[in-house]
Every structure is written in C-alpha cells, then in structure tokens.
Length: 345
Image (spheres, rainbow, N blue to C red):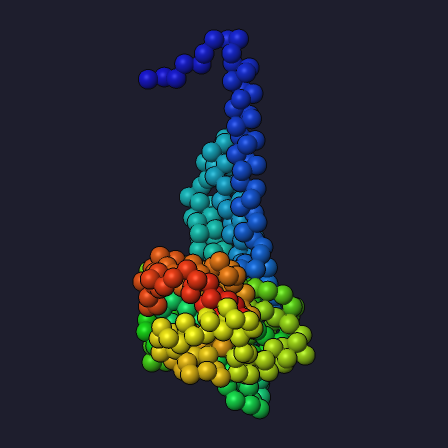
C-alpha cells in the first residue's frame, strides 16, 4: 500500500521533522568516533609496532576508498554516457587494462608494502632485554618477570614496562588457546598449549594502557583483561624491587583479623602471599594485590567494596571461574578480608 503524504499544510512540518531526525542520528553517531582513541585502541599507537599497524590500516582505508570512488565514478559514467558504443577492440582493451593489468599491479604493490612491515614486527629483543613470562589462565593472566640480574617476580593481571626499552614477552597457555594483545603497543600473538611464542614490544611514551585476550577461550573471555603501565626506568625499577619483597604486615586489627580469616579458610591453598604460610600456585599471587589497579583481571576496581563483592560472589561476577564464592562468611569477616588484601601493596 502506498504511503500517504498527508495534507499539504502538514508537509513542510514533516520535512522539518525528517531533517531533525537525520540530524539527531548524526549526533548519535558521533560518540562512535571515540572508538579510535583511548587506552585500548590500535589507532592510538604508543609504540613503533603499533604505529606500523596503524599506518597499514590508514593506508588500506585510503587505498580502498580511492578504489571505491573510482568504481562509483565509472558506474556513473557508464550509466549516463550517451553516444556511440565502444568498439569491440576498445572494449577488449578496457577489460584487459582495467580488469586485469591495473588490479594486478596495484594489489601486488599493496601486498609488497604490507609484507615489508612484517620483519620489524617479529624482530627479537636484543640480548639482555627484560623478559616477561605471561601465561593465559581461565580467565586471568599469570605474569612472571625474569630480570637478567635477579630472581623472578610473580604477579597477576598487571604489567609494567620501562619506557623506550624493548621487552620480550614469552607467551604460553596451560589450558586452551588465548591471544595476548596490547592494541596501543603492538599486534596480537596466540598463546598455544605446549608452545612458547615470543613477542617484542617497545613503548615510546608513558601512560596506562589496556590489554585483552583476542581469542575466544570460554565463558569469561570478555572479562579477561589487564592493565599495562608504562613509566620511566627509575620508577619501574622501584616498582619491581617492591614487587620482589614479601607482603607487608597487616596495618590495624581489622587487617590482622583478615589475615587470620584468609589462612583459616584455605585461601592459601590456591593463592600465594610471600612472607606467610600461603603458598598456593593455582590462583593469582596476592602478595601485592592491594597495589594493583583492578581485581579479577580488571573486572572490578580495586577498592574495599569491590573486594567484598568479589570474595562473596565470585562466580556471579565472572562466570565459570575456578574460585568458589565465600558468601557463607559473616559480613565482618568479608570486610576484614578486604581490609587485609587491600593493604597488601
């Protein structure tokens, strides 16, 4: 059924309303442009590898945009052309040149440009560079620093890097395939069970960035993130030295009570807190968990209320996580646990 245009006196108003709706749609689409920036954007590079990848994206967008414009221009020309049709010889020449020679030359050049970017992206780190072992767990990140002049340092779900220096990541998985990706610093690399893959990254500016798992790995795949803090070398050295130290003593009676609750309820069977009897290796190392930016692989902010929520209802916050919920504990014990863990900085 044809749509009625409405009374004549209403048509100008309808046109104004339609124009307003289109304007509102354009305004609503503007926030989408913010996806090109931020702490987890491949188009806001903070390292040479990410700059090459972003350059390839913009080159691709420009190239294929020109191709689209050329195709549209030819289509419009053909649709509106008047006069004598092309001869068979000219038509054949057009097909050969525009349909075979031109695409072959252009695509070959484009492919050569893309392949030329690969060697720098897979280059090995220089001898003596900082090495970081990262294992993709379900669903969090086990991190172990392997400095060339000291013992390893264990932590989880947070990575810190010295600015301007190459860092070699050793990537593995004890369970399923994950993919390690820090979009602002470089490309993604799969973490495959039984194999150690290597990735060298350099951050050329300080800041806080965000990493993620880029390979679907199960129920909480989308809740498997981590923070990346890039800082000056002196600040990084101080941080790494503090991470190597044992856990600090509880500050105050509530935190001391929280340590007792932690040890009495079997938390030390899965988690390690260096300097205490807790020496578990199943879950994340919690020696300095209070100093991390987030908890649960950046699912929640690191504050007392979030710690209580995480301990009390862990599977509800992160489905199918291996940690059980401790909702059976009294509220006072949960708050004491949060005070103890929050004080482990």
